[in-house]
Image (cartoon, rainbow, N blue to C red):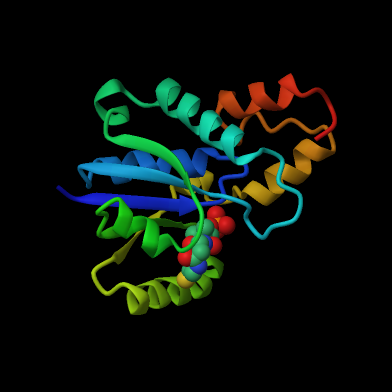
Length: 167
Ligand code: PNS
């Protein structure tokens, strides 16, 4: 069984992430959306539990049942490769939006391979129409009350609306 882990902060998930996981689910038997607990990034808008819940709802709403059944959502703490080992995953999935992503992704892929040679990283080129998206921009727009409806799945908008205007 080919199991892949798709790690990230996902604060919040965007249509770009959904596109990547959907395509990864066509390649692997199981893809585990792995939400990093406490990302070292300023001002998370959603708690880990909320991010997991938002992603679960987004997958249930966007993916056909035969795709959704191969996608799991979990949170993790610590090293991505340790989480991969615990889940018997031998692949890490990441999306590449632009050349600017390449350098840091290359560094992470090489470092992870050094730590765990049995875990390889597979990149998907984020769909062109989503390649401008980033969670941090979404976060900023939402913080100023802007409309992020075209950038994120409805589950994100719902959870943002549920908490009122302030983030
Ligand atoms: O969505 P992000 O913030 O770009 O995801 C980055 C992530 C979570 C993939 C990366 O920070 C990570 O793997 N963190 C877990 C700790 C770890 O394994 N660090 C070594 C990476 S080489």
